[in-house]
Structure formats: C-alpha cells, structure tokens
Length: 187
Image 1 (cartoon, one colour):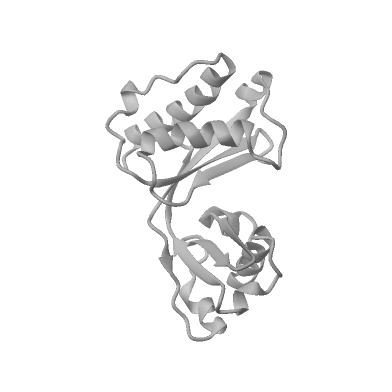
Image 2: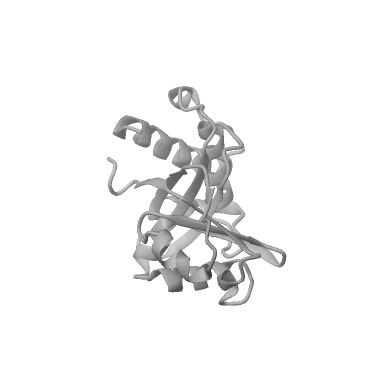
C-alpha cells in the first residue's frame, strides 16, 4: 500500500465521521479502487495520545473502502468503552488505520512455544475460546512495552477470560500483521 492510498483512506475515515454528524454519506469516489476485501481497524486518539475509540473487522468481510467507513463511524460513535464523539472533538482527534493480513493459527504443542512464535511489534493476536474471544493489534504491545507473556495475558483479559487462559490449548490463538498508519505520519 503506497502513501497516496494511505492518505485516501485516512481522508475517507475522517470524512466518514464528519458526514455522520450531518446525516450524510461520505464521498467514496477517491477510494473506489481500494475495494479488495481486507480486515481493518480504525483507532482514534485524542491530542494527548489517549485512546478515544477503536473498532474493526478482523476478517476480510467487506471491501476495504466500505469497511473503513463502517469502522471509523463505529470507533467514533459506538465503542462501548467511550461516550460518542462530539462534533467539537473532531478536530482534536488523530485517526490511525490498521489494514490487517489474514489471521493464521499459531500452532503449538506446549503453551511455552508461544514465546518463540509471536513477534512483538510485528504480530497482532486473536484468542478464541469457549468463554470468550479478543483481539489486540500489533501496536498495543509496542506502545505498552509488553513482552510476549504480558501481551498474551492482556489478550486474555481483553477477551474477558482468565489472565493465563492462553496456557489452555483449547483456547485457539491466531496471529496477523498490519500496515499501520496515522494522520500525524501521513500528510
């Protein structure tokens, strides 16, 4: 993905939020060519760098351009961890987009093998188990200086499961990578 496409997607995400306030649809013309199905997350940070919303599709179920519209609006208005974004806040947020690769199972015979098979700063993680599921983007580990074990513990916590649930091999862990870009870096 080149910088021009990244700019287009960031502009589309911002326009998706802006037009939502007016009950309109964003202009999709510029992003028309970005129609391959891909997983994507939109993360909103306030000017201090604090999380303000993050929602996404881990699997490639929608064309990328349409998915960005949906998840940008969901991150702004429907992340249950935060109140809906107000129009006056729009100029104070920084938008980040993570375009995901297809998740692949991390195959292990013993839980200790995760330590070698998961790369901090490269891999994002998904856990699926009988009692919950959760996802952490690759940047979560680097932003918080996690090692692999802490990353796995936090993944379990995000899923609403026990802190060490990753040690139970009945809980399936997958990893993915992401192209990550934001409005600060892409002008």
